[in-house]
Image 1 (cartoon, rainbow, N blue to C red):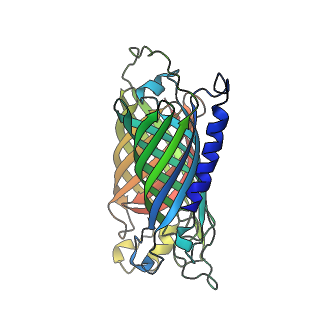
Image 2 (cartoon, one colour):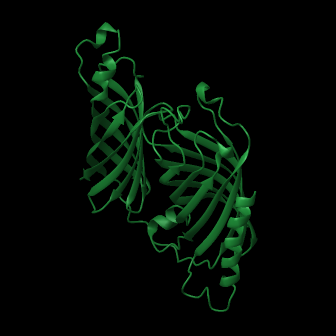
Amino acid sequence: MKGFSNVLYVVIFWVLVAEQPGFAKNKTENIFVEARGSYSIFMAHRPNLLAYPTGHFGMYEFNVGVKTSGSKTWHQLYHYPHIGLSIFYTNIANNKYTGSAAATLAYIQFPYARFKKSQFNFKLALGPGWLEKKFDRINNYKNLVTGTHLNAAIQLTQSYAIELTPRQLISFGICLTHFSNGAFKLPNLGVNLAGLQLGYQFKFNDVRNPLLDTNKFERKLNYLFAYSCGLKQVYPVLGKQYFLSNFSFIILNNYKEKASVGLLFDLFKDDSVINQMKYDTDSSNNDKTNLQAGIGAVYEIAIDKFTIPLAAGFYVYNNYKVLPVMYLKFALNYYITKNIHVSFNLKSHYAKADYFSYGMGFRF
């Protein structure tokens, strides 16, 4: 794994620098560097991807991060998670259709089971990803996974870390990485990569603040209005892009400091639906409306100024009968003020992504 060796050399360089007298004092509080490598496969999640290369290949990461110190309540609620930036690269087994892939990911890693010298961690990473090759109707017509070079990259990692010394750790885990443009431009079957991961981490320091008083927490109801919109392309490939929008009303009960549960009411307007119904012989679609309404449940995680709502809903009104009854929604919200947030959203029908959208909302 030549790529992993190169990343490891960078980490070793920083370790040698950090060992110099006085380097870690005050300047590198809780900072760490980390190299991770994965023995990976391309996941052919659709029958028409079975012809893609099936050999094993390497995925490589270089991470720079900070272990939260406990200076804020949420640090301690989540057991001092890690936050940082990850540089990712893989050649996808020299796949002639997709080429190599790279990404720059912001991440947060949660320790959820800790022991004296080890712990289990879950890592969530999100950021822009780049695929070397995209669909081209003449030169690369067998690329069915993406119609754009620029994609969203999402990574989930489950790992077990063992402390070698107070400042050095080694980790073993399973890593899943996904690239998709959210149907902004077809084709968009997406790239799914999975691998067994090995990692090495060096910590420059490890400072923890005293526990904070969290007894001031009070349960209360929150009401949210949110709006998001985006563009979506439907088949045939190289066709028109359609405007879509979603208005949501959410009632949330924050039953504990880091989580809320509630009800979700959705109104969707998807201009691509009318186009799709032109080719649908179902006579129940004859009124050609593109409005959809849904109701569902939502679970929201709060991390400082960020919230991550996960929702499952059912259409109570949907003229396009081809769609499943159930839909799923994922969002990443950032509160720019106490009550106003901006958002990145994903809607899907089971495991099939429908579209990405961007918006804002108000909470009271």
